[in-house]
Image 1 (cartoon, rainbow, N blue to C red):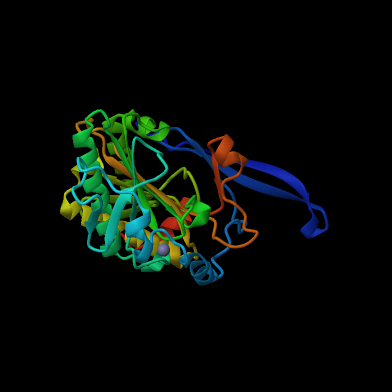
Image 2 (tube, protein in one colour):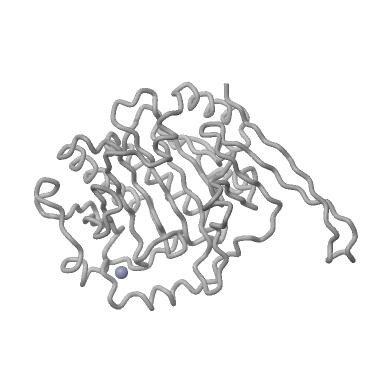
Length: 334
Ligand SMILES: [Zn+2]
């Protein structure tokens, strides 16, 4: 059975805003029904201020010398070996994929949405741009797993903007094909299929955090988020991104674009995303996606990754999952 465990905690302090009168303060601790990872839901404290509109200046300041812009990409980004791609790079629509110079994985890729789009605010990441970029990653993952069958763990990820961990401003995705799972891939792959089904069914029945289905993909606000405004998506019947066909890739791209439109409307401009694959044939594993907002890129910003997130693996967020679901109402078909 699925356990949506949560505990409310109350503390007390003498509040300087009210003449040092005693005041109650509350928080809630929740445990993820699938992985048991804990999270803290805080009262709204304005921890993540909205983007202040300075992104265009950052874009302008990073354009000269950008390795992913069209005039440089051809000559400064690496090429894939012929076993993976005859032309050395994988192109779908405007998207272009090439190997990552930094070996984060045995097979590590970077794919730009477009060499002509150095700056893409979240609201401009269309279903087309995302679907085509995902498609380059899927072609890459298929080629890498075919050439190296021991590397069965695939993930497709995003660090969008500097606070999310991107070292290059130009928007891109990153692919990972590795012989070993990451800690989280292993945690998720170890969850029983029945547990995933029962989690989704419970959330659908309850309706508070369930956002709807785009056809084959279910979306919901995470009960115990890993970070601010975390959304989750599940693709039942597909274990690895390599199994996503053209139609499902388009559908998933559309869902991600909807999610990013929501983030943009909430005033965010930086996000992380992971599409956690398990090896093809993993029984009953639904392809999992998690995405979250990150602090907005601006001088003297507060990082959303604190001692809690980095060292205790327990996020503290002041956007409640239920409020996020209210903000998302109607966007994912529900
Ligand atoms: Zn660029």
